[in-house]
Image 1: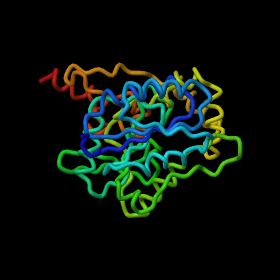
Image 2: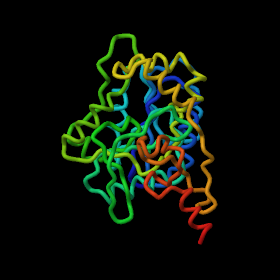
Image 3: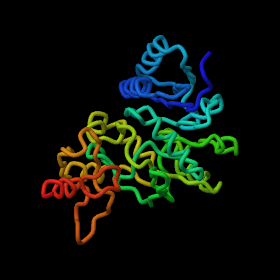
Image 4: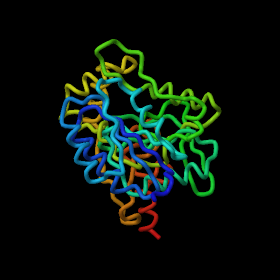
Length: 301
């Protein structure tokens, strides 16, 4: 008999079958705690159903929820309402999970009882992403860190079971008919803060955010143009601005002889007169001293 799940995961899918395949395979390869997985498909028109069918043949313990129509982000509630775990994990279909992500999530919720929602992303985008540094403030306790924010942290995140039990649900953004039916992650995070709980970024990236990568956006331009057109607060102009920034940015070699295979990120700082391009420096989790500085002092000593 399978143990009761600790993490209940619902993956929301609509098209992009190749990314869904990477999401599913990386998830099943890295999950190490008792879990359950629901794959919710919003009437995809590509090869997504075939990908889901093959995956279920290999992993029959997982469950598919196949919708006959596209109801957008709200469809994720179909998986959440069947979830039994103490932590409810929401995932979009463009995530590649890294080893240890689940343990890091568990440790964060154990260390911070105030935590209501934790993103699987860190506050500093990777060099591969056409994205921005997120405003936040660090909380540290017992050797664990999260970055609390007054903003939303996206859909791909983990929420406490208490959030669902208090009646918080996923909704769609109120947008024009015919556009992408995007999950209203801003409303989700606002309602969680309204319950007096923290909304936070992880201290570092626990996944690779495939859907935000510049290369991915260039491969599927029409998909992302329509996606950003649906984001009325950001729009296509915002997408073009992010892509211009991504093309123009310097990409440092993120390696360290001191820290081996540790994943490095850019510095968690905004540009200033003293440092116009802080993300050219490297850090671990956006909170250490610059790796380049540490290696310099190490070499001198």
